[in-house]
Amino acid sequence: MTISDYASLIVDAGEYSGRNDVAHLFSRFLGLAELKLNRALRVSDMEHKAPIAVIDGEAPLPADFLETRQVLSASGLPIRAVALQQLAANAQGGAGPPVGYAIVGNRIKVLPGGNHGLTMTYYRKVPPLSPANPTNWLLEKAADVYLYALVEEIAVWERDAGKAGAAQELKLMALSGLKIGDERARWGDAQMTVGGATP
Image (tube, rainbow, N blue to C red; front, side):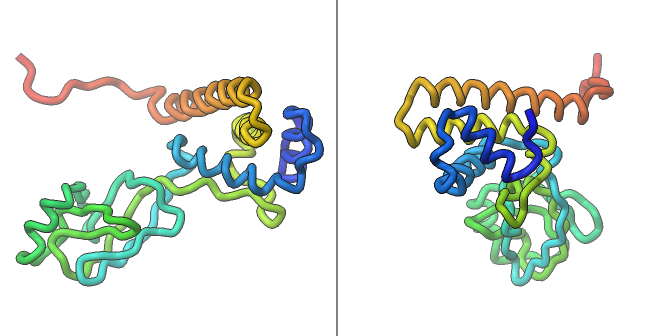
């Protein structure tokens, strides 16, 4: 496999799908593939840490936000996620450092309200490929994921259920391999401990 950038991905996707005549639709297929990958994929390469400035109890989420991993107060203490109902029930009173948060739409709301400086570690979207951004971490690490995702999108466009199913199966196998590698890198040397009192 010789996929190293956007241009080579176009060539290989055309060859693997048997459709070298759809290069003009490539950006559409790529956008759909990346949309689906962002829904399914959560690996360490997607993690990012960013400061969040909370004003009057809320702040916008980063534009590339997918899912929260951890939120820390200005003093470095973890803040727990709470149900929106709990946040609303306790919104009236209180001051001091934040103790809870909820994600509402594209904003983070904090309990108690007020102004706070937070640090959020979150999963961010895969940086989209384009002629101006010809490569990203996913293409460098798992070009097969991109390739099979694009072949799947081309097959869906062709209304070829058999080809789409085969490409989807290959994509899922490639994603599984990427996730297993990520878990091994994160936890390969970890030891299991049981919490709580032992008899």
